[in-house]
Image (cartoon, rainbow, N blue to C red):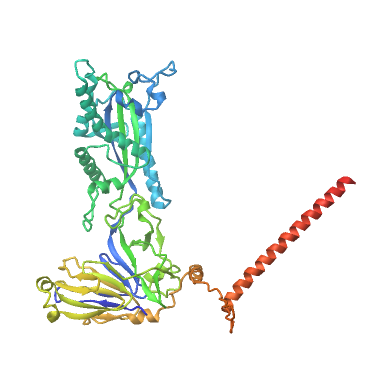
Amino acid sequence: MKFYLIVFISLLSILPLTVHSHSDGSFWKNSTIAHLEAGLFFDYVGLYKPSNTIIHNSAIFPMTTEACHLLPLSDAADIPSCNVTTHRHKRSRSRLISLGVGIISMGLSIGNSIQLLNLQEQVEMIENTLSEFSQTIQIHEAKLAKIQPNQIKIAEQLQVTQHAINDIIPVLDSHSQALNTLKTGIERLHINFQRSSIYLAIAQIFRNQLTLNFLSPDDLQKVVYHVIEQGNLTFNAHHGSISIVEIITKLLVRQQIDFIPSSQYKNQNPQEIGRLVITSFFAVPQQEQTSFHVYKLLTMPYLHKNRTIQLSHIPRYWAINPTDNTTMEWHDPEESGCNLQLMTSCRDTPPLRTISKDSCLGQIIGSLPLSSCHANYVSHSGVFVRQLTDNVWVTSSSESLHCLKIPKIEYRTSNHQTLNISQQIILPPIALVNVTPGYTILCPRFTLVGRPRTYNVSSLIILNNRELFSTNMSIVDVSRHLTENTTWFKTNWTEQRMHEIIHDLQQPITVPTTHQFPTTRQFPPIHKWSLNMLVTKLTFFGLAASLIYLAFRRCRTTNQQTLRII
């Protein structure tokens, strides 16, 4: 059964869906693009800007002796309050202690090289500033700080986190016999619960799992909006299901944890052994950069010569710069810390490319002959339905579907009147369907609902060199473009050969049956005899080779013994 592609475009008297005939390779913002000959659809996602700018902030926590176990052994021995006995040096050290670093592994590209250079400059500046941090600033509580060359600017007070730290100090002073065991246990449990989030976050950072969970929810809000203000970030509300905290966390590229001993600054609290500094580095886009238009690519399975095939070697997401026509591709966006369907921001920018006429995607965009395109065999059972925009759907099935188009109100109120007011339509095996707002299309195993049209109407662009339809038609039959352009339906020869071998192995082998007094003798098919003869010959040659090897070895042993006697 052959697959056909039909486009249903319902024209409205107000705000119709704009349809363009496309042949020059231009891409517009907020457009749904369909390439009918390849079964490929471009679903517009949003605007993307490479994240080349690095910003940072540091959270500073005064720590008591309960933080001694976080320090390296050699450094904890230099702090008398930690009560660690080792071989002491004659001269005590007073320096910045680096506890660890968490960093995201990024790919190699020009955009990432710029990002890494900016990140290295920020790290060197912070380390130099923290090393000279002394005498000039008094910190007795948790603070959110902006570290600048030769100075530390206090931004916000981390109130809730500081309260959790302050609750530890009374516990340290409560080691008195007057307190009973039950009260001490309850207080310890409460303190451990408050501190566990900090220790867990530190362990995650050491495993390169960057996180902001070391902050309480109230203080986390301050950090998030501080990053938004510093990076001048703007968000696309098209997909609003992701939280702002998750967006900011995905922009993390590095976190480092440092400890400043109390000997480097004026300390009024004898229980304080130093200050824990957690510095977070964020990659944010530059607002002056030209935006890329990001599209999600959707390939459709369809039937060809009784096999279901699908366009292969196509990236999941594709972006183009309308200024210079440079492009980006994401085959596995999760590896780059991207969720482009929810937010068009990535901490890892893919390499920039140019549109090549020798690639399949370049030929599709340029409306060229599809000589570089290939297809793979896929398993497709039932019906494939995917929504492109609000009212534009793509369907694929093994056969044509008989559907009913009815008003949405009538469908809800009375089902027995449906046949009187419905319109029968037939969806071909593959169809691009634009559902009229206020109507519902009922098909076997799925339902398409027409939603009210918004002011921001997406345009439908058809990538083809020919004129396909006139504006007064609601259904456009494009099946001839699939039947006339089957030359690119070529699959990988190795994959096709493997499918044939597996199919042959799955066929049952018939064994010839004999009777006690056969009147007529039955022989298996010729190819079965050929297989048996091949096995017999291989067995014979194997035995012959073994005998020849044993004879040669025996003769060689006899000659060696003769030489020894001589």
